Length: 387
Image (tube, rainbow, N blue to C red; front, side, top):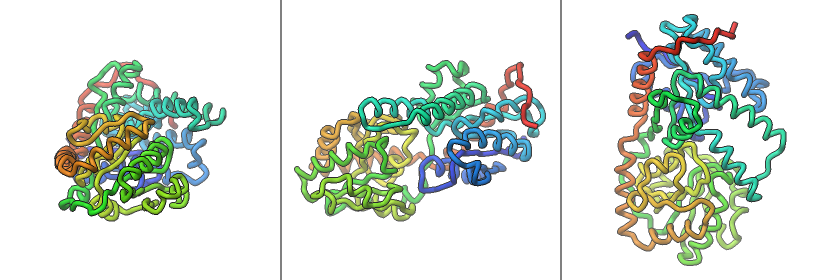
């Protein structure tokens, strides 16, 4: 086979401090190291007016299809619901050195995220406008169409594959792949020293979906029992004052906020922390928890996204119910008061994360691409609507 040519497209800015964009960029780097001819495309490749969120759900799928016409790849690997136009080019013989195959990449099942949003609205945690509801309904239709008509689908977590199959969008289970992301080598490197002060580590945007309200309440309960406990909030992507304002006044001086952090700084913060806390209501995968485990931090989190796949409750981490800060605080305290148990979980967490590299992710992705190329497309093709 000649060198595989791939168009790797994502509807985000390639910001390495954010999980989904980073996952796509790092995958592309790995594919290139493995000999694939990778062509990247992101939101920043379009003119600024076309990047507006309400417009980009229409403009980006068209831009992906036009890029495919220009680049002529063997595979278009496109994130989210943005395969709706390029899917129509499969099997036409007009693009690529072989018949074009499209891989829809599910970085997080948007229908499951929407389910969480609606639950939050009913509980009074969030508010959404009718305009946004109508806009997102269109987005969900795009996702369903992309998944249904692509040659293959890749998910990061098994719950997404299960949802796709249960929804009836795919009948060919072999063309829906589960390929977790990798972990940057910096997180695997070095031993983890024991912190002198109990310190909790949280990595993620400061949003309700990440369970921040539960974290705030649980941290207060933990400090009632262990007053010297500290909390690091990294990668909040909002000003520090905004984060600290959510905490009780007596707790604030024990909270350190670093809104944006480099990978080197993240590794330093992890090395001086006791455990990672991720009380998320929903995660597409949740790369932060796997990076923390690679650095030797057990995770106290919820059974969502990749955590549901990789955390073994009581062995390398602890599961807690969503929206239950008292249970979250109890789980944290149970670990902090038992250093030997914490050490054992630290070793198990590191061992769990050890196989997850970006090259391993790239190798699995290439195998999925090759499987798509070997599999004949359905006999009925949709004519090319991109001119």
